[in-house]
Amino acid sequence: MWENFVTETRERVTTVTIQRPPLNTLSVSALMELGEILDTLEKDEETRVILLTGDGDRAFSAGADISEFGQLEGGPRAAIQRAHDLFRRIESFPKPVIAVLNGRALGGGNELQMACHLAFASDQARIGLPEVKLGIIPGYGGTQRLPRLIGKRKALQLLLSGEEMQAEEAKACGLVNEVFPHDQLREAAFERAAQLARLSAPLAMEGILRSVDRGMEGSIENGLEQEAEEMLRVASSEDAAEGIQAFFTKQEPAFKGR
Image (tube, rainbow, N blue to C red; front, top):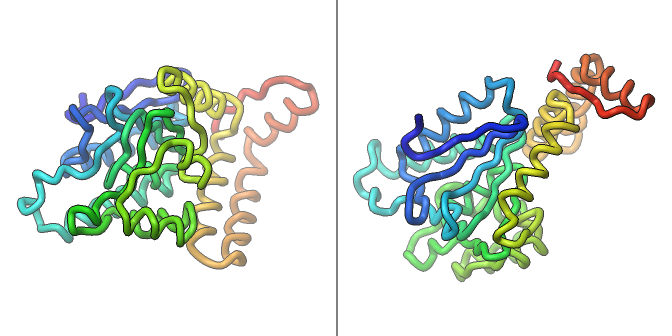
């Protein structure tokens, strides 16, 4: 169905796999297609959690397709804006989007995974922003998201040197959530996603994602106001009643997303 991706849904988890061998680079057409996939999955009631990964064992994504530089429709500025809009869409998406780093996540591939809500990595994964070695800078949000995730000084070290970080170091500084043995990564990531899809109420997850995303944009006062609005919205839902009843009866809740 898709030119650059393969999708599969089971147990309310949809896995979206970048399929652009050998290094799953992000062409303009791939980024546009990913936006279309998100449009579809946002409306899909069978999808509660999204896993985003790369095909094969070499790379989650090695970044932007540099062969396209100089021939982009609308010029570089338009291409950058399209990527910014897409990555902000992922960041503010109402369902959890989890990056599964099966190999190198470099340049735009790293910027893509940083826009996701969570990240799980293979112990063989390498993560970096090497643009400075090409005489350019990250253009898909790397100079903004990396300091927010790991702190200014560590981020500057990586940005200015262009060096790659090993998976365990990325976990230690907060760039990824968990690291798994390479041959167990996909199944371990799926199990965690399936648990979220099964045990976490969709409306509550959406409220948490929106509260955190909008709260990070401004003052804590604005964030608290957003949190209050989300709490009032979900507290009267059928899912809230189901969750509270299940708690008292010691049953597993059956959330319906309403």
